[in-house]
Image (cartoon, rainbow, N blue to C red; front, top):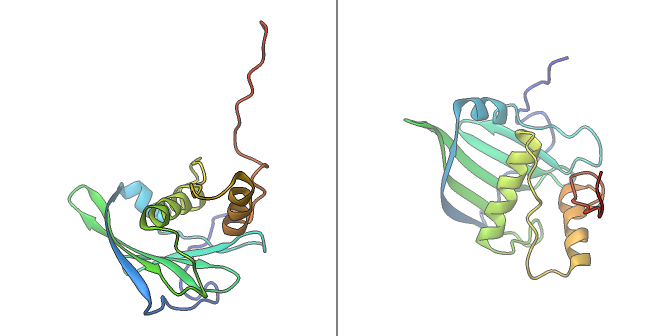
Length: 160
């Protein structure tokens, strides 16, 4: 069964508010990555916290429950594949609480890597949060139990 491409009409959502920040980036994707990214993501259960779609060289990342547009990334063709060079970040405090520019970019990269490209990536944790608050933040942002899934290292003493 093939996955259907996400489009603007795949999920209820709101436009990016006028209160937004513009960040210039130096991102790159291969043609193969771009094709995968262009499929987007439509939530399948309440645990899925994001709705993501690509339209007219813009990748839109919305919170699935509220429909709020949090990130809007421009991805366009260039001589080496695809360049991701302009990002709008929602600055409406009733929709998104931006921590800082670096965190916003890291969170967007995480969403693209894990949700769209299916890569393993560590969740970007805000340095100013305690460990408990980091776990709550990850659950809020991603809808996953931070202790479930993923990889962890366990050192075992002795020989096998």
